[in-house]
Amino acid sequence: MSIEVIKPGLASSIQDKGREGKYHLGIPPSGGMDQRSLIAANLLLGNPEGAAVIECALMGPELRFNEARKVVACGAEMTPRVNGEARPLNEVFEVPADATLSFDFVKAGARLYLAIEGGIDVPERLGSRSTYTLGSLGGLNGRNLQAGDVLHILPAHGYATLGRCLPGTLLPEFSKHYQLRVIPGLYAHRLMPESHALFYEEDWSVASEADRIGYRMKGGSPLNFVEREPPFGAGDDPSNIVDACYPIGSIQVPSGSEPIILHRDAVSGGGYAMIGTVISADMDTVGQIQPHQKVRFVEVSLEEALAARVSYQQELERLRQMP
Amino acid sequence: MTKPEIQAPFPGVFYRKSSPDAPVYVEEGQVVQVGDVIGLIEVMKQFVELKAEVSGTLLHFSVDNETVLEAGDVIATMEMNE
Image 1 (cartoon, rainbow over the protein chains, first blue to last red):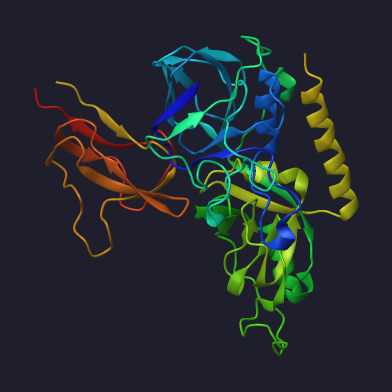
Image 2 (cartoon, rainbow over the protein chains, first blue to last red; image 1 turned 135 degrees about the vertical axis):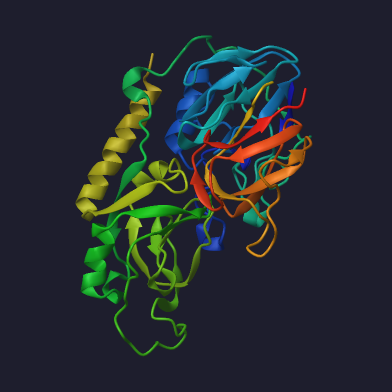
């Protein structure tokens, strides 16, 4: 069967759990920015948890199904509609043959994950079907969906059950003011102590420049770096360093003005000091923050970050065990 | 006579003109046709044109130039010509 894209939405792309282990070659992991919602959608349908789905940012697409197929939508709150009739989020429903699936305005969260029984059939590139648009790699021709695209769907496996839904305890919680836990470093010593303290004391708001590559923040006080002679190979700006590897989640502050949190389509390295790294357990949350919503950074220790990672993994395990 | 509202289809910053020095796309009270550009919404490094989905008179804007919008916010009210 196949699905025709009538309207693509704002930035809809095919994503799975991503291509790990290629970042040292400059290829970022890509994959769903909210992995938990992507996995939940696949598990609800009985798909392999890493099957390829459509990630829809801020505005849903309009899709026409040429055959009936069961689907589920998890993540951001955009009410699905089949030929205009509302369907629930986080619950398996069927789109009949020749029907149109569309979505309402986003009420909360930023990214919706539409899983289709069987999963989307695009070729694996470097071990993943995820789209990496900067590198024109994976997904459908290495780019976001466009009107007129036709998505081929793998055969239905028959395990999907109408009405199966996420238990209330596993539903996502959205906000307009988020806390993100951060481990300071690797270059936190380059910040003046008062700037280091201010960074964690002020609210930041997400700028319009927030996408799969990175989330730019504004609204906090400018940060000052310690005076120094630029070492050989570093740029002249106080926020510059000799080029280094960028972890996913790392926070750079070019010229001390607007922090950028790198996400799953980020470049792998460069010459800006990273003053901290958002912990892995909070990266799904970053992917659900809308532009202009507020963020407060909270400093945590490595031990706290590891404990948070364990509870994140336990939550994924509860998804895998759900009835 | 119906008065359809134009709502923000996604969150972002609303602009009534294509650049700071350009004239506004549409004045209040002006007649617009389906597909006419009413403004821009900026989000995720994209400027997306907001187009009229009905023909009629654009009665008034509910938000100013450069207002931060949430999805569903009312941007303008139209009056359809019978």
